Amino acid sequence: MLEVDQIRAGYGAINVLWDVTLKAEAGKLTTIIGPNGAGKTTLLRAIMGLTPLTGGAIRLDGQRLNGTPTWDMADHGIAMIPEGRMVFRDMGVEENLVMGAFHQSHRAHVKQRLEQAYAMFPRLRERRTQLAGSLSGGEAQMLAMARGLMSNPRLLIIDEPSLGLAPLVVNELFEILERLKAGGRTIILVEQNTERAVGVADHVYLMQSGRVALSQPASQVELQHLHALYFAR
Image (tube, rainbow, N blue to C red; front, side):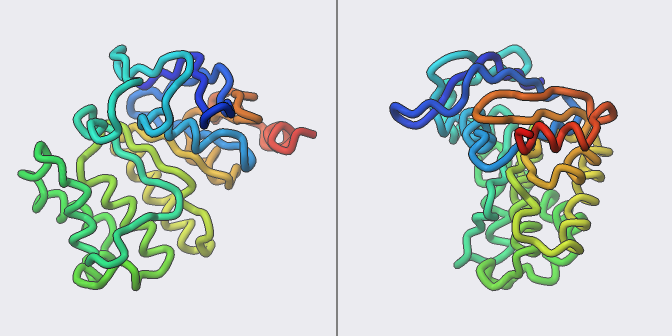
């Protein structure tokens, strides 16, 4: 579905990604792990058109994606849930959700998708009129995920969903990821919790210093070896 082919990208004169190649297959969950500074978020920004490429190509179903403006990614069926939740704090929960279907092509389905969001995240229904800024960290992450699903994306990109959350909330979020995966959703997940990320994934990529250090089916990953690479032992 998504192919990243030998891309280079960075910020000004500083290059971060060095000939990165990976694939995300349709209906599968692909996880990308690695230490801070490995280039994971830069990779997601490059896919979303937020960071321009200086080399290589990104393709979706064979169609070249790089050069596409970020605001047109919804037309291609791509949604990203950024690190740090980034909800609209001064807007209500339901208003945040509606913003996820802001693009004109999705507006006709708002009511249906609101019901789907509330069915998947019942706590958001209870908070529907509450300001997003008053939510707990776990609730805000649920809102960010539900908002990302409002456009019914073909490809869902999620950056560090468990960051800073209590273990019980992390368990709940990974259960939701399992449900999305079982429903055939194509997902790219960036996550630092290696054990949970490998446990939910179909394929695992490990990044180190802007390069892919490991590419392996999740069923074949040995955590001890993965951690040795992760910490560059």
